[in-house]
Length: 305
Image (cartoon, rainbow, N blue to C red):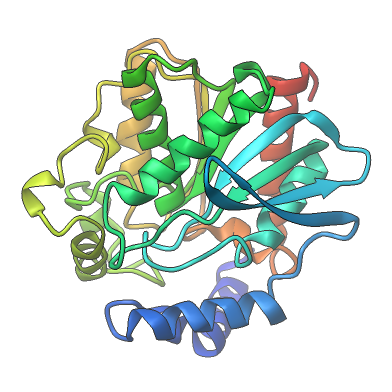
């Protein structure tokens, strides 16, 4: 996308959709309702993908089942939304297109959100769903865990909790613009401050307090996985936009993984912003990124690309 087209798109999407998603500026319930409205009118799931609601481990989930998908391979997807907004419904477009392109089924949990249910409620739900998948017959090598933004942070926290409990790791993880540092200590918070069209450091601090009111816990690796010991974690694909204030979350975490000898693929997309993959149908980069994610999933779960 050229810079002129990018500027026009950012102005359009901000004016039409993003203002009422600004959690620091609007009530949480207002932001949630607006995101659901967007999902109903703008974020439409892929054709040929059926949705089935059920429960796993006591947590409400949606199963997204593309036609001809492998039923024995599953993408466990944790939606983003700064730990305070978002749902199974808001991410159906992104997850359904990813699952269809990869040829696997996907499961999206309705994990508990802050501020009503702060840390570790959402993490407990994510761990319960993963354990439930294992109990239902999926093998660890049949599962990939993925998430965007806060869902990316929650994905890594889930891996850390599973490792601590001695539960086998999934085949791999896929992180999209992961929110891995509630302290906001990365250099991109400053160097990308004038380029990020959505977020400022003040925004991060507000949602961090919602999610984890005790600021002394913000460096807890289960809250901010960028500070974790990553030994024993599975291979990962990380996609992040070069214009994000959260860029350093991804680059620092990728460096840690690489130093530990863990296979990590870090993709920094020029001119892109936070979770640009959501805008499939509005910009070519989104579908290109989804296809690369699908190729990675096929490689890790099916041995193909």
